Amino acid sequence: MASTLSTAQSLPVTSDLQSLKQRLIAQARTLGFQAVGVAGIDLGEDAEHLERWLAEGMHGTMEYMSRHGARRSRPELLVPGTLRVISARFDYWPGDAADAWAVLADPRRAYVSRYALGRDYHKVLRQRLQSLCDWLRDEVGAFGHRVFTDSAPVLEKALARNAGLGWIGKHSNLIETRGGSWFFLGEIYTDLALPVDAPASDHCGTCTRCLDACPTGAIVAPYSVDARLCISYLTIESDEPIPEPLRTKLGNRVYGCDDCQLVCPWNKFARVTAEPDFQVRHGLDAASLVALFEWDEPTFLARTEGSAIRRIGWRRWQRNLAVALGNAASSTEVLAALESRREHPDAMVREHVLWAIDQHAQQAG
Image 1 (cartoon, helix red, strand yellow):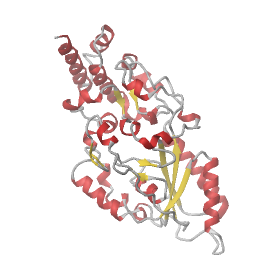
Image 2: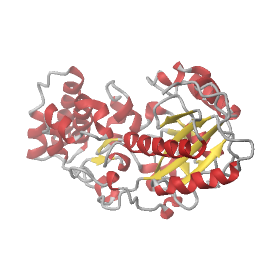
Image 3: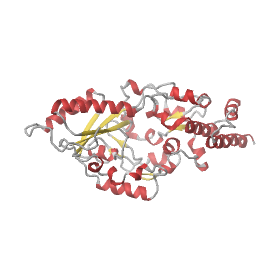
């Protein structure tokens, strides 16, 4: 799709843009979205916050966060012609998943972030957003647009807040008073001058549960997360060895971390997703660490087909599992699994396996 939007307004001057917006929201609901809002393109304060965060190096090795410069905070630079951003929310909490706290408390089990238990959300949301654009085209004729789902330099949470979908909590995730935070976001940049919504207000108050619960202290201040300490960054984004001082703090979290959301009081209002694509696949909601560690690369690729987990590759998957096994209670089964990877061909994985073996040696000593 072209990255430049049409400069001509597609709607006749007599069209009722407010009515179009309401019909758009209704259509989005038929496609599975729980909420839709419209934001303008002014992100001045958020741009300043991003610049400070980058200047402090809190993005770690995520160079793409700084590579795109102002395009991340100025939608009209990323996609020329943009006048509005349609922001959409899609719930993902899987009602069939094993209890998250029970899995975290069982060192024999692997904890996978709840968003990654089903189909890759990028594909699901992109298809639905494109269907929404197709509907809009049928309503107004050709119009300029581009769809995003965590796929480009977009300040999606700031845009969603400005579109009235929720506020950015102290853990940096978006929260909504009637739906918590267990949802995905997607955007449509468009040249349609739709009426904008009022930004959502902050309702975190004096609560600090997310800061207190973070296993690694990654939420270094309210509304500020240091990715270099964040388990989601360490297990998903980073392709480097996990720093030794942080390894024991990962516990059995092998793909992402949900602790800050699990303790958020607003998530008592979270709704179970009705989307079949987000239901648990391959028993990954409470799988055995040893069983997952035994997967060879072809098995990993087969079991993670269509899943967000596949993007980290077998190498990082093995690294993460080795750390979790190092944190598990010693048993013949755990030790045998680690010993089977002692001579792993990848140096990084091998180093984490040897660390894990040493952890158990210290327990025995």
